[in-house]
Amino acid sequence: MGNTQTKTRVIIGDFNSHSTVWGYDKTDEDGEMVEEWIDQQQLSLIHDPKQPKSFNSSRWKRGYNPDLAFASNRVAQLCHKMVMDPTPRTKHRPIGLQIRAAVSPASVPFRRRFNYQKANWEGFSSDLDAAVSNIEASPENYDLFVKTIKENARKNIPRGCRTSYISGLTSETADLYEEYKAMFDSDPFDEATTATGERLMSAIGEQQRQSWQNLIESTDMTNNSKKAWTLIRKLSNDPREAEQHYNTTAIQVAHQLLLNGKTTTKHPKVQVDWNKYNEDQGFTNPFSMDELEEGITSLKNGKACGLDDVSVEQMKHFGPRTKEWLLQFFNECMRSHKIPKIWRRTRVIALLKPGKDPSEAKSFRPISLLCHSYKLFEQLILNRLASHVDGLLIPEQAGFRPGKSTTSQLLNLTQHIEDGFERGQITGAVFDRPFCSL
Image 1 (spheres, rainbow, N blue to C red):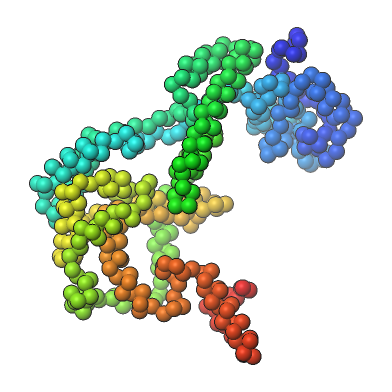
Image 2 (image 1 turned 90 degrees about the horizontal axis):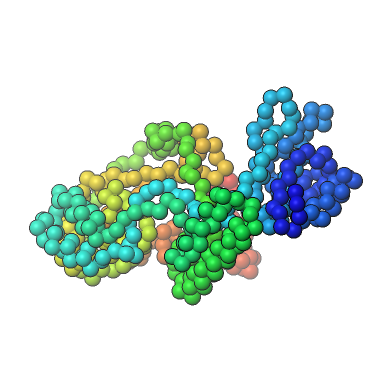
């Protein structure tokens, strides 16, 4: 094999030795000899205890790891051991060693996305203001309004998707990366290839450290941590796993939802008497521009869109005429008690619950994505009702109330029990579910 100091070596075979390093309960004499040998030869064991055993003993009815793989220390971190499917006429499973490049791009599913950082927001706002001037603000024209937004978005906001991306790769290191790829394809074990890979990793690592430092200095983890976690995942440079396909269909999940929602108790339909909400209470007054501005500001960026595909980022860059159109549209919905048909529909995404069987429909948790304009309309109504309704609720009501939670309810109950104990009283409690200790 040549000089062990300069040659890169890969050794795979059945060593028939026991050692706790590769999964045995104890180390025998042969295992000690192998450990001493790999230290002398400057080799590293490539082993993953989570992988299946490479040999199944019919005598002892259990699996073992007599088949080992070693690689030179300089490339060991780039190696990945593979234990493949069993083959007939042997109790040994084939093993292999995959040599990965020092830097490899992360592959992501293709999906065209708006690049809001490079958007021409000034042109988007002005073009949209000019276009909505010819549209009447009514629920029937909402689809035309959405179509106008999409046309101006495609014109002023670039879209695309990088399916192959390396975090920390700059224009200066791109040429070095191309050089390394050519050298790796020619001879991945050559000393020059390894040295070039180390220089490339060092340059990319320095850029990632600089990005991390900028993140720490500019990100407020208290108010919004999404940007921080997004960048952390990018800096990890781990290949993104492909989306897993499940055989459970959307119809099966929808049927399960109907079964979950069925109940034997019939509740009478609530009829709202709008006349009792007079103008003195302000519930039926037209919305003002200040209320609309406050509602738009409260929306959070980065949220998935509903069926109209209008994002929060686009709504926050509406021009004055577009906001005036939206305000008149909301007031018309309030006056006529009508909403667009698309608001009555939702985009449902089924997420697999952790540790559940993907072949069963009940293992999925559905998430409904509403149109952001609909959520904004609801927010404007909620802002008017919240202060009035909050005064009518009992102090013990904590659900969906700001400043209250289950923790505060437990503290209130504990304090009530302690106050009664100090007065020599006994406190009893009735729970609608099986009792659990506090």
